[in-house]
Amino acid sequence: MCYNINMERCLVKILGFDVDSFTFEEAVDYAYSTPGQVVTINPEMISNAKSHPELAKVISDAQLVVPDGIGVELGLKILGHNVHRIAGVELGKALIEKFSKEGKSVAFIGAKPEVVKSAVENLKSEIPSLNAVYVKDGYFEDTDSVLTEVTDASPDLVLVALGHPKQEFFINSLKQRLKSATMIGLGGSFDVWAGYVKRAPVFWQKLGLEWLYRTIKEPQRFKRIFPVLPLFVIRVFKERLCNI
Ligand code: UDP
Image (cartoon, rainbow, N blue to C red; front, side):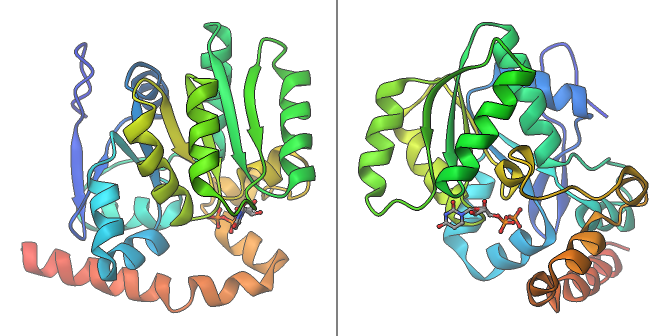
C-alpha cells in the first residue's frame, strides 16, 4: 500500500484500468477530501469499457476507482496485487455518515420514486444529521434540467444510482458543473437502503459470493454476468501470462 499522509493515490492495473489500492477507511477519507468522481468498478463495467472508449475515458478520468466485488479483487490477486474489495453500498453509506457528521449536504439521484424516497427516510432515521438537499428519482427524461437542479442545490456529496454506465456518464457531466462535490455511482444501493432488496447474508458476503446469492434471488441477472465473468477471468489470465 502506498497511501500516505499526503493522500496520494496508489494505483494497480487490471486489463488496462487503474484501480486504487486504498483500504476501506482510506477510501472514505480520500473521497471525503477529494472532490470529483468515484467509480465502483466491477468486471461488467471493465468488459463494457473495453468496447466503449468513451466509458473507458470516464473511468480513467475518475478521481477514485474502487474494486467493487470479488471479481475485481480476484482478478487483481491473479495479477499479484493484494487489494481488498470495497462494496459500493458500504462505501456510499460510510460517505453519507462522514459528510453528515461534518455538517455537509447530500444529494440522491436514482431508482424508482418510492424507492429513493424510502431510502432517504430510512437513512435519516439512522443518521439524524443527514441534510438531503436534493432528492430525485432516476426515471427522468430531461437530463440537462436535473444537472442544473442538482448544481443549484450545491450538495457536497452526490449519490447517483442509475445503474452503470448511465450513472458514470451522468456524474461525468455533473463534474463539469459541480466542481467541489464528491460524486459516486452506486448501482442498486438505494433499493437496499429502502429495504426493497436484501443484501446477501454476511456469511455469503464474507465468502465473496454475494453475486451468486443475488443471481439466485434474481435469476434475470444471470445473462448480465454470463459470459462476462468467465471472459473477464480468461482475459486476466492472459494479461498475467503476458506479464511473465
Ligand atoms: N435505474 C434508474 N434509472 C434508469 C435505470 C435504472 O434509476 O433509467 C435504477 C434502478 O431503479 C436501480 C438502479 O438504477 O435502482 C440499478 O440497479 P442495478 O441492480 O441494475 O445496478 P447494479 O448494482 O447491478 O449496477
